[in-house]
Image 1: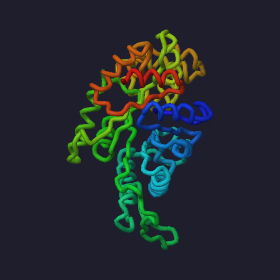
Image 2: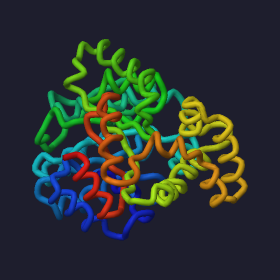
Image 3: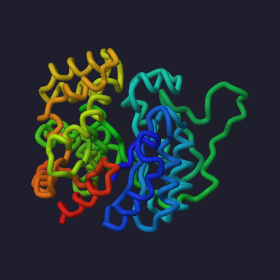
Image 4: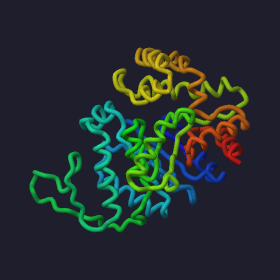
Length: 335
């Protein structure tokens, strides 16, 4: 399950996460944008559970150096007794430049170098030196006294799983090449084949098998007999991502949904959202789009819809819900 951003969800995710653990869910994931951070929430969950794995979906690359991310992963993996999964993502230019104060350029190249340095630290084969375009260890200039170091703490797992959030063809291929899993959002099973081909290209480039890779797609889940009411619960989420997660000129979520065939609707949603008419933006979200990217309605309908996600190559479903009833309905639908 995916608990989302702390502060926009219930004040304490523990009741629903504990129920997910009781129901046999595999993992619980936390995210961050420009408010709460994912690591604190993941740590809180890990400290109050026994079996369920904890993940970050995602930790922003711009928010931490590779070494800081590796230190966090090492620490949390030890304290959770091997239950941590490291999800990473670049985020968009508004957050990278406006919140973290770093230039947004070459996200794929930045991600490649970042993941490589994190892996070297986790593998702990010696002091880490790296001369990339985006990451340099030790840093050039300064006082000139920096020296290569290796982690003072031995990682619990040198092969700790790393997941990448990716939306575009290039970064999806990069996930297949570098990571252990892919974290897609606004995932449409009916339209997944082009990105799946790019994922397979990346896996082939690295000489890896698809069976060793986890496609962990996020999906809003709202159970209930009134399908219209279920759709209405998803509308604010889609309006925010399509209309407001980025500028009119550069919004990766809007570009993804436009590519699904909803370009006119996307333009309308953006116009409304960016002019402050958020409720109207939600009403402008097409029913067909909601049905594509979410699991909605009675248990039987959710069960039937899950088949499409399996056929599209999804191996882990990250259920986005803060409702205990929807969580239980999904568990029932999944058998």
